[in-house]
Each structure stands twice: as C-alpha cells, then as structure tokens.
Length: 463
Picture 1 (cartoon, one colour):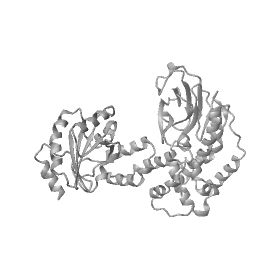
Picture 2: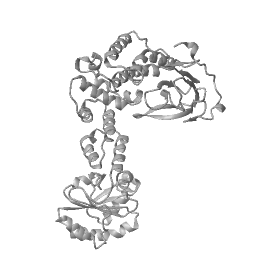
Picture 3: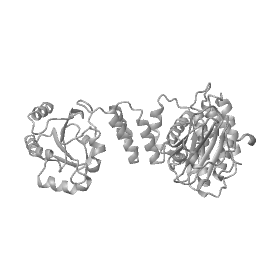
Picture 4: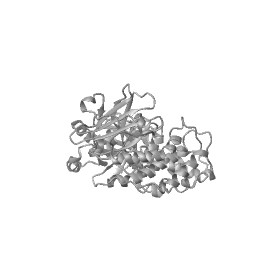
C-alpha cells in the first residue's frame, strides 16, 4: 500500500461528533476513518459478546467517505469495525481506555493505519498485511474466484513463513499474550471458512494439506479462547469438527447430527454447551425441542445457555389443551428436586398457588377433600406448586405443616416466573391444570377443586 494515498484524518473535538451514537462518553477514544471501498451509509463498531458481535457505536459515512466514532472502552480488548457483523468489509482493532485515537483508511482490497496509532493496532495491521491474501480468497469469494487448487498452496506458504514471523513486543503483556492466540485462531478461521463458501471445485481426502489433519480439537477447546477472539466462535468450532470428519473421508448426510455426536471430544464444558444451545434453534417444534433437550441438555453448562433453551421452548410452545406439558423441576419440603416428568404414567392435577393468595387458600379445603376421595389411587397425583418469594420459603413450609396439606408440595420461589408462570402463560393464581398419563395437557386451565366439573373430568381420564 502506497502511504501517500492514505488520508491523514485530523483529531476531532466532541462537538463535531453529532451523528455518532456511542456506548459511553467521557475521555473517549476518537476513531476516524475513510471508507474507500464503494459507497456506504453507515459503519459500525462491534465487540465480541458471547458467540456474536454486539454493536457499540454507529457512525454515518459522510459524502467525502469519512466517518468518526467517539467510544470509551470500559476495558481493553479486541473490537471490530465494518459495514456489518459479517466478515466481509470488517477489520479487527485493539482498544484500551487510555488510548487517544485510532485512525485508518479502508482501501479497495485492505486497510491501512494513518497518523499516530497504538502499538497494538500497528501489530494488528502488520498481521493483517501478512494474511490478507488468504483473507481475500477465503472471505471475499465473490470478488476473488478461487478454489482449493490455488488456496491450499498459498496457505502452506503462509504457514512456512509463520516460523519467522516476529513476536509482538508492544510492552502490553496482556495484548502480546492474547495476540498469539488471536493470530492462531484468525488463521484457522480463514482456512476453515474457505471450505464452506461457494466454490467451483471442492477438495477430498488427500487434497487436504496436513494443516487440516493436524487440528487438535482437544487442544483447541481446552479454553474458551475461540469465543474471545473470533466473532463467530461457535460457528467456527462447529465447522472445525465437521471439517475434521470430511478430511477423514467420512460421508456425512447430516452435519448437525455428525457434530453433536462428537461433543464428548470437545474439552471445555462451556463450549459443549454453546454448541448445544446454538443447534437448539434448528428445532422447529416444541416436541422436537423437548426431544433434543432430553438427548443433549446434559451438556448445557451455564445458566445463560439453559435460559436460551427455555426461551426457545416458550416461543415454540402453544400452551393449550392436548399440547405437550412443559416440564418443570422444584424442591419439595425436604429440599429434594421433583419434576413434573417424574410422574409420567400418572394423571397429575396441579395447583399453582401462594400463601399470600386469598382465593388460593379458599380452594385448599376443597382440594383436601378431593385428595381424600382419590386416596389410595396410584394412578393420580396431586401436585401443589407454591410461587411465594424465595425469602418466604420457611413461611411456606410452616404453612403446609400447620394446615396438614397432603399431596406433593413444591416451592418454586424466584424460579416460578421463568420456569412456570411464563411458559404456561399464567397471569393470575390460583391456576389448576390437569396433565394426562402421556404427558399432554388435558386442561391448561382446569376446573377448580370447588367446581362440580373436576370430578367427572378426573374420572374420565383415570379410566
């Protein structure tokens, strides 16, 4: 790149940043640039959040192709600037709270820093110059017509040159250590994603260089680095697993199933859970998602992953009579976890209540009488779920003891909303539900114990 062609963009005052929407202000890093690759209305600043990019600032691209951000990083780390979250027209930078500015120009095929920039971003520029020929063939496949015939030799050439590639010596130990990991994963990202873009020819068996055969899945997944340094880390990990199977010559008709079967080979619990949570979105029905959870739910490692699955289940489930009952699990009075699914094969009459609820307590004598009438019948279970606040658990325990409440008594506490009320669309209590022996809802809003309708309904389904 000819340095004479780079626009040196001056430092701007905050008063000139009227069209910029940023995450935080106050001693910000001034980010300025010139977009020299076609017309673009906006350009965005992103940081990695989980398995995706989060937009933290957006700037309008002016008529002269310049754009400006003012962003105050809360912590140092990798950021990405581009036209969208996609890899095309997107570049990596490193920002620290103490940085003053970042200035660069996007050229027709790459980018180049302009003016004073941090040592970290100088290192990222040097690395990008090194891998840009690979990136152009891998990411910009609509512009650079390429197949494995020309890409693999270039990849092997770059791998040979890596041995002499100088280590980062910015003086920032955190960056220098992270940059080693970033470079390794960035190269892997380009090498693997090349295989999944439209091509006129595709490699098989011995066509693959040793690089692909040498990918060590256990080592790659020893930590969650792939989530910290790759904008679509889980997507890359899934492609790596599938790639290794392809290199081994396996004929794979169902990529998702093939990847899920290799979950035990992924070393990190969080990464296994991310794969499971990601593929859960491929399930199009509530029944299918429940089956998927039964097979792979054990791999969900974090509450965030479990919450994502709950949201999907609630979205897919239309809570109505004859639909599959949504499972839940809460502790009983001894602290033992008890799930609705534990009673599969039995009729389950559910009472959703609270000790503070007057109408709920009015139904309790009728419920006790109903339970007495069916006492000794092993085919029915009376299940009460209290939705009192978690701080009132001891109050609930004293209440059920003093009132000699029978049946199965569970305490939902603070989990009631997301695991019971929201999934079943319950907006008021008491709510009674009747679940059949096969786990389907006979009545999502069943007659109350005080109603003359409940006995005939129960008897009809006990037969």
